[in-house]
Image 1 (tube, rainbow, N blue to C red):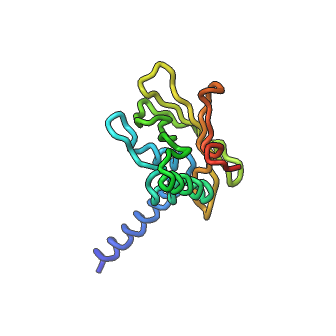
Image 2: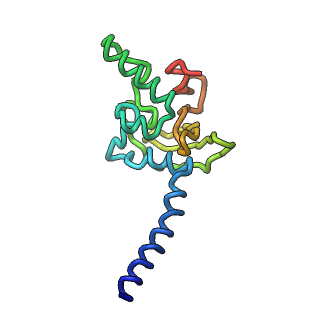
Image 3: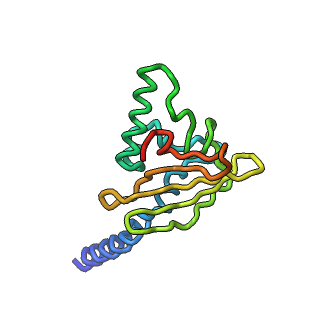
Amino acid sequence: MTRIRELCLGLLLASGLAVPALAAEATPEAVVKQIYSGKTPETKGIDLIGDAKLRAKYLSKDLAAAVKRDIDESAKSGEVGALDFDPVSDSQDPMIKDLKIEPAAVQGDRAQVGVSFNRGDPKRDELVYDLVQENGQWHVSNISKKGTAEEAWSLRQMLSLK
C-alpha cells in the first residue's frame, strides 16, 4: 500500500512539474521555434502553407483562410498563386542555417518575433512574425521580410488582407 502511495505522489509531482513546461511552450517565441523545428540544411521542414493541419495549428484564422483561398484559386485556374515560395525560409528551396529567434515584443494579445538566418548567402535573411492570441494560443497573423524596397514583402499584403 505504501508503494502505491509513493507511486501516486510521484506521478502527481511529475505532472505538476510538467504544467510549467507546457505553459512555457505557449510563448510566441516557442511557436516560431516550432515552425522552424524541422528546417535544417538537410530537410525542408514543416510545410506551413501547403499542409491544412499545420495552417490550422499555426496560422490565425483569417490568414489560414486567405492561404487556403490562394491555393484553391491557383488550383482552379492552373496559374501560380500569390504564394510561389516558402515564406518561412523566404525561398523556393527551403534551407535554414544559423537560425536566431529574438525575444518577443508582447503587447496584450499581440506579439512580434524577429528571426534571422543564413541560406548560404553572405547576407542574413531577416523576417518578422506578427502573432495574435486566438482561443488562448498564439497564432501567426503575418510574416514579413525586412530589407530594401525590392526585398521587403508581407504575407498579408500578398494575400490582400488588411
